[in-house]
Image (tube, rainbow, N blue to C red):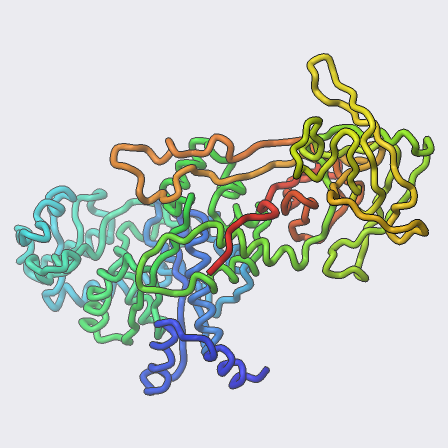
Length: 559
């Protein structure tokens, strides 16, 4: 499909408000091309909320023939690390996007410093000796205007000297700051002489100890966009109050007029997106690292078996809005199922086994069945599954005193063993505690699919594994990390950790058909009748581990 046809096809659906803005800007000639950026701070691992921003920034640029820069907002050296820099690049590549240029706010430290000196010379910035507490108190409130700093009217020459001494390391952390001189009575609190620079004697992951003063976010973000000639600076809704200040710096400095647009951030049920709280979960050992499959980090959901295609489908379905809303995590899980159902390999695995002895099976006989790896491709690749007289079935598939509509195995009842024969239960063995440990069954040799006997059907079909050939695997069944749906609405005075789900992880030993451990598809497989599971990267030939990606079914239906 050529570019024009593709654009026409994309426009057949309703445009979101950002697409409307971009198309209007292109049509009017306001911009000649589109340039966006993704600007993470390298102080943690990316999470699902970032996935939405990545898909939006890169997706819009791709749709309209533009480019996207990856720019790290690395202005806080005490919390940033190259570990996070590398993980962010890995996550973006995993999602399938390519950035135009890899840039850093620290690339612009010298230019930002020069602009700060320019503001000082023009009487629009001053060095303030107040403490952080005094500045906060004197800023006022929404109802009460702020109070001017006693240092606000220092001569420009003195401010310039002090600022240069700050850069040279003459003062301690917190001893002085540089502030813009705007309006201490402004209704937008961010205009009440915002901080431009603070002193921080810390080694930067890129610039080392070259700098001991660092620009604040509001004095960095817009100017960085301007330097890169970003046409549409797209960020989440909490930054809308920052936009007027973003514009003020650009207009005051007379530089390229980048403009900021805000969209609603992703809020997901039963999920936390706070970097601070996620870091606490890691540091306190509540989860097993940033890539724990229960974490909403991209490395976590990747280890769980979520696919880039499923995340993109989810981001497309939730759309782009200007109003915050809580999205149902079941929609994300639905997208994962939709993607995996089309391409995952199938295997039979028993997690809570009951042994089945087929009494009329010839001792030592092994029959092999060629079973499709995916029912959607019956003529596609297959795996060979051994059938013997000693099997395992799941305990949940047998009931001694079964209700009328129980269509699995019961004494005197019949079921079909998937892909193979119909069996009939004739006897039950129990241990001293009354637990069922073995079922005695017979098979009907005429019921082999495709065999010569007359076909007959039964209502129940269950999965199974040959006991002799079973491969033992560790199965980690992951569930929701929290029990509270809206983690942003925790009652005052309550700790979010009170809502941790004690059953977010259960571990089982499973017995799998022998082909499963050798699966190298790189995609989560389906344990038939159970769910989708992903081989953990830490698996070894001697110890194979599977993480539950998502259960097989859910009653949820997307609107």
